[in-house]
Image (cartoon, rainbow, N blue to C red; front, side, top):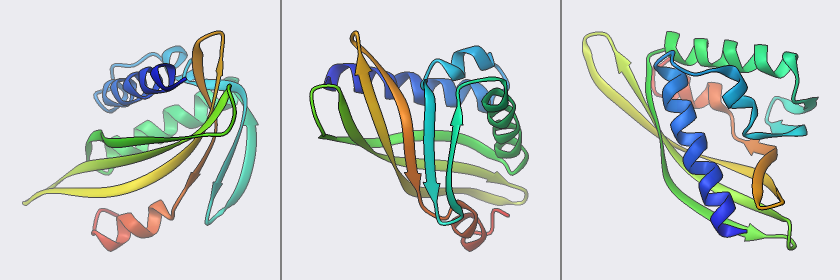
Length: 143
């Protein structure tokens, strides 16, 4: 399981990088996620399907990240907490780097906890839990 999950997050990081550069196909992004998912943050809990609605939300999200100057999303560390033979919690430590006019780049460290399922040797995200991204961006003067 560990090898499949680490390969997933290597792809996740690379896909995010291509999306920030405006060079990603949304079909590629959707391969990272299971057919259904849940998401939790301080703004609430949502659920959804890996469909055209997710494709649109992800495209708008990447557009927003580019608009606020996000230049890089780097995976600093990945720690796995196995649940059973097919599932784990992947604790991802990220560093986001933002370009800001007239100032040095700003890097922000944050964590996201992903629920991951491995079926047939392939890992996919079926959920994530994150902190208050908007508050963190405001605190660092990004937005």
